[in-house]
Length: 190
Image (tube, rainbow, N blue to C red):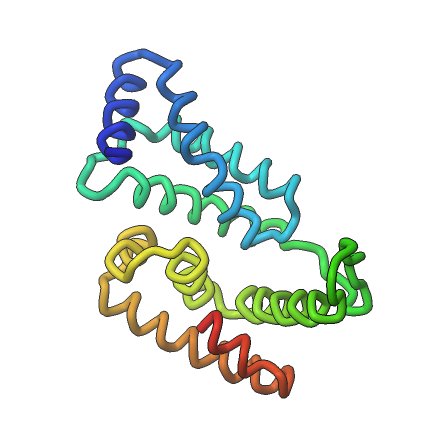
């Protein structure tokens, strides 16, 4: 149903109805901002990157051939743009001594441990070589299946599967070297 609505909006935009692009933006704004955030870890910058992605999507909408899902196409366009942006201006390094303030609540030490584990996972993923990082982000964080991941990244399923496997192996090694209490994180995220 949602895919049909996406295709209808694409047809309307290509037919000159610019208001239909607003529907596309409303539907995909959150997912594209979240994807950008995985790359840059900065909300305002992620919003800016997503806005640039929508400009790119609009300019290239006539190139969408409907061979695959619209979501596959917009994620591929966005990923290519996000990679280019991050190559030009990588995110600033953060001090490991910075600890975010915890919201008031029960057992803040457990929340701190969870935050530390989450941050370790994010840093480990971010430190992977791009070909492995992109596959891991799309497959796990965007929760796409192998076929969709391969299509978004413009890879064969076999190549995507191999890169996903290699990325997981690299993550396991990084996380084993980083902390002794990471086994639980690996089970949850990998």
